[in-house]
Length: 134
Image 1: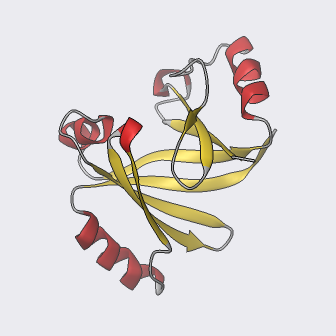
Image 2: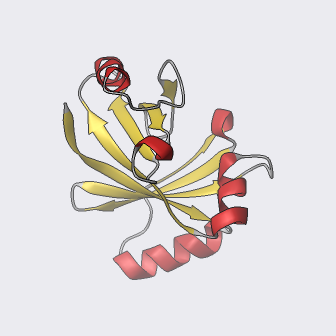
Image 3: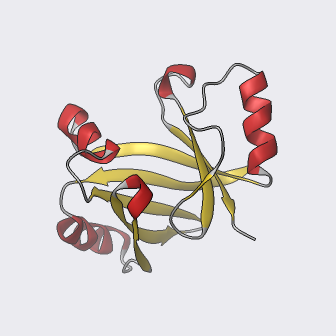
């Protein structure tokens, strides 16, 4: 079951500049910065009500974020939905014909297990499922 929008992921070229911009825009500083080596990214999180904004910067020119920015420029990269059981949700969506980008959930930023759905199966939107690691 999808519980809520957990965060919006925004691809950025320069984390320092983006942090300043979003701190000014939201009127509050980021609460967490984290590198996710497996995804070749650095992340920065801002709280917005019960949801979050995740800024995502490539740490490697071969990372998916670097390729995304090269193709589409900076901007909204993905929408993440919090789920109560990521493995069950992955199985359910797979059975419904959605294309998942991994067979098993991976450890992501902010103490989450994550899985992405291919945009070709979600009307062009990169969807991330995430579950708090218990």
